[in-house]
Amino acid sequence: MNFSNKLDLSKFFKEFEDEQYCIIKLDKNFPNYYEYSDIDIFCYDVLKLADKIFKNGQNYIDRGFEIKATEVCLNTQVHIDFFIGGKLDFRFDLYQNIPDYKKILIKPAFYSSVIENRTAVQKQSETEFFKIYVPCKTDELILRYIEFVEYYDIRADKIKHANYINSYANKLDKKKFLDKLHFYTAIPEAKCDEKKINKTFIENSKF
Image (spheres, rainbow, N blue to C red):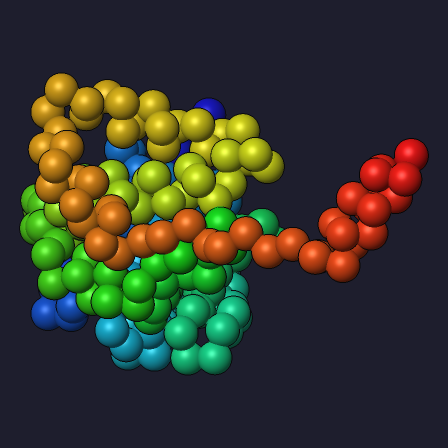
């Protein structure tokens, strides 16, 4: 499959250089991308980042693009989709807090910790060098672990996160990783219907 690359992503991220943001689970091909691709971005102000995306995206409207914004959660998660020819070409998925996970509890402070401990990375497009921000290695591995735990039983492709973590096993500071994981996360308490359990127990006892 060939890259789409109809959007010059370097132009968007050069506009973000002064913003406090962090790209989550950056694709190895970035800034190249395929159709239907997306990029997850943690930031402190989704509306400000969304405004910059729209301003830079105006040039693409003249080229036949349609831009749609969807507020997934009030002021905390926004999708900005670029369509061409009726097909989704690329999505910016902006977050202002940690996504709502069901299988693992995450302290809200982990979100700001990811952004504050981010790492700058130099990338190159066809025309220029530009800087982006990604999580430090410990935070990246924790985020991938969270994704794996949340979706492994319903999304077979999420095994890639476990494989990624394993690939760093020899280089990983395991104590630092586990200390931070345990500090910021917890497994939800199991809930059960006591009346139903007691009723079943009584019926089985009689049997």
